[in-house]
Image (cartoon, rainbow, N blue to C red; front, side, top):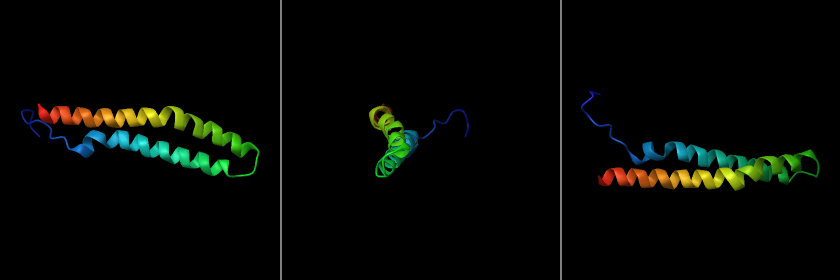
Length: 79
């Protein structure tokens, strides 16, 4: 590409990293849920260590990032 041509941004390109973050968060939540079904002991504590932050921190942040990326893409397309 030459310097004079703008980079064409697709929706996928705009949201690919937030989608990766969302999928990673959902995988961590699934691991936490699977560990929670095991008998009491260390596995249940690991379920809290993995699932707790994923549910309370990573999931909301990933969703906000995803929505912000979509809004930014839309705003740039309208300009």
